[in-house]
Image 1 (cartoon, helix red, strand yellow):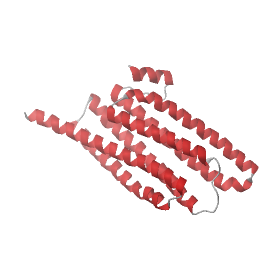
Image 2 (spheres, rainbow, N blue to C red):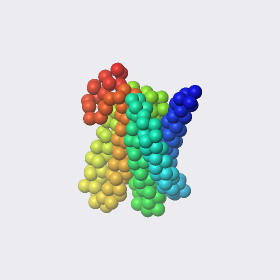
Image 3 (cartoon, rainbow, N blue to C red):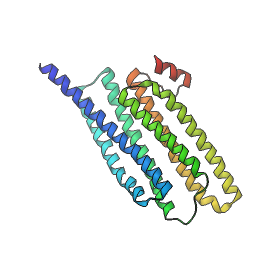
Image 4 (cartoon, helix red, strand yellow):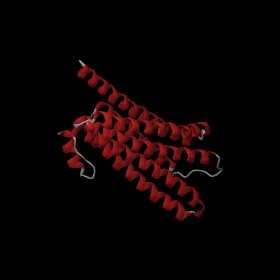
Length: 234
């Protein structure tokens, strides 16, 4: 009976940490949504809210990191449980960085709302990139919640789409700057914004790859799409 009680307590501890990771993920996803909305609408209050929430994301990262360290020290997890703990430690790092990128977007939105200079037409493509990147994060978090390794393929393909959109934005912004030197300042700022969105996609892809490691016990980083697909299906 004592052994059964210990196992139940251990499972409860793992589930509590898992819930915190998902809470952190939901908070970060909302940051992206709000940051983009503040950029589109010029809502300064919303932009400031995104910036203020960054400390909540950082706090959750510290909590999960400490919880995982305690589980490793006290419970000495093995096999699938150990992979889950390691996956969560990696995931919170990527989530914290996504939160940082969302905060950058919010700061840009705040600055843009106070500026008399108009945004470049490339902002339309930035919105499309941000929408894809947010969907990637949502799918990655859903894959973690469901222990579903198969979503990594769709997320990897979406990441390629974001990369292509980023490269297209760079080319267009360069054209703007060459044609009209007056656009150099705002074009560079939009370029940094595009880079922030592109990095959100990269971090979301990382999380989906950690899910594969947790479920399958295989590292799918730095392998071809075909190999990744085979691993996810096995």
